[in-house]
Image (cartoon, rainbow, N blue to C red; front, side, top):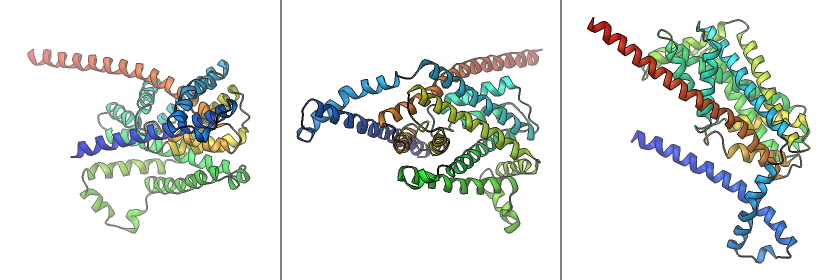
Length: 369
């Protein structure tokens, strides 16, 4: 029954992903087809639904591909470099988180694991699904601190999300008038503020606690839960980060740098498409889109991210097809490094399989001797 429930959860999210993409694509293609019908002297409202659909989807995909191909190669190349830079900055932050727990992971190994996580992010739920894989590999790196290693992945993601939410909230201030006068920006902005409040509460409880002080028997009930001893050990591990002086400030500083690079990547693509988009507005829109699409709604946030870009950039006068192209190009840069992560994953699996076979051979030889 549990397996069936999990499969159903995956299926309905995939269906939602396809529905969201289909809806935005059909909306854009239909709008373009209306203009085409007017130029041909046809009355759109008197066409059958089948004729409207055929006109929309006959030319629509080719026109969208044509818009995507308009991006300047230099902008596309720079976008790939900036996306790679975000992954490397993330590696630096994770290694700093690991150091707090006394876990020392070499740059090469941490980078390899991060690229594998990037690979799984391309099709798991939200844009953080690869963290499960990252936690798995982190736990394999140690024999005596497996719980702590897994906690570092959770803490790294929590700090990254909280910093992104904070960054988005701060950048709302210089864009206040724009947000106030456009519902397409106002509602997502309110969502971000609510998410920031929730993430702040989780961060505070995880790093500094306070629940057990108000409810002395909280730890007792925690231990009685399934895997309660692991939950308690995880909670104690989180306390180490709150006790480490200056840790949070440094981690947030690295995260802010990562957020800036993310915005620059999207801005670079917008310039490559010759879009007139104020950079200041993008510093609010991009983190808002990334925060909401990180929620585990659809695989890799696909569909959610595209709809948000189209809706929010429309307030700046950006054509919907161009906004969709921008979103897809940004995703393509991420997908490119995901494919590199797939190659790394294949190499890791092969190498670790050979190591396990070698260890078994040695053990059998020692037993025989």
